Length: 207
Image (cartoon, rainbow, N blue to C red; front, side, top):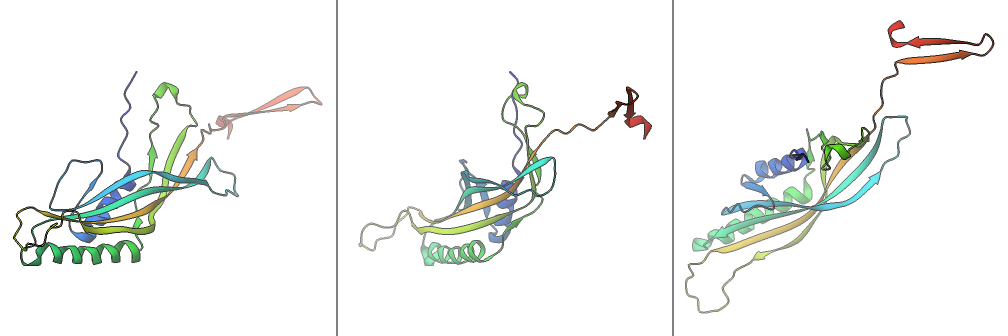
């Protein structure tokens, strides 16, 4: 059995690049073992809904609206000398909130054919999904924020361990998906004439 390699989904890459550009820090797509002092982690948690859209015209595809659940988590780690980690926590909290909750985040250039994860021999000619148009990040919700490793005592002693500040949001990635059908080109038409018991054949070559 042949192994099918799935190409990276452009919508995920576009979302990663948008967040990196806005915040100026590295973004990684989970699962990942990458670790950085400042990072945004993006995790797709599944398709929440696939809704068939109305198609009033005759076409070779069926349109769908896909809503994909996404978790976006910003993490900053370090010491709090001169309030360094506290200042970063507040700054990134405000920046991320303004960007995700109040900006229109449109993902452009994400159209692509989706490879079928099944083996080639199991696929049919009309079994084809295509992401078209632009994507959009919608229904953004703040989940929680805070330090994951604060001091547990009140002795006011210094601490060498790193603090980790984390901000979590959930959102939905909205995509337009077309189910394409295989429509072979018409090559020949046979028109029967019952009166004369004849058939007229019109082929593509005679146009």
